[in-house]
Length: 57
Image (cartoon, rainbow, N blue to C red; front, top):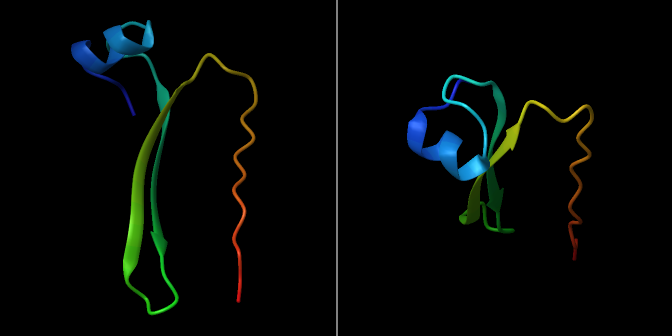
C-alpha cells in the first residue's frame, strides 16, 4: 500500500513508498469488538515479528 504525503512525512519516508498496513480488531467473549488498531510499518524493514497474547478463561 503506497502512502500519501502526510503519513509518509510522519514516518520519515517518501510519498508512494511501500508500507505494511495491518488492520486489527479484537473481540470479547460475547463476540463484541473491544479494540481496533491500524498499524503502519515502513517497507524498509527486512523482517517483522508481530505477537500479542490472549488470555482465555
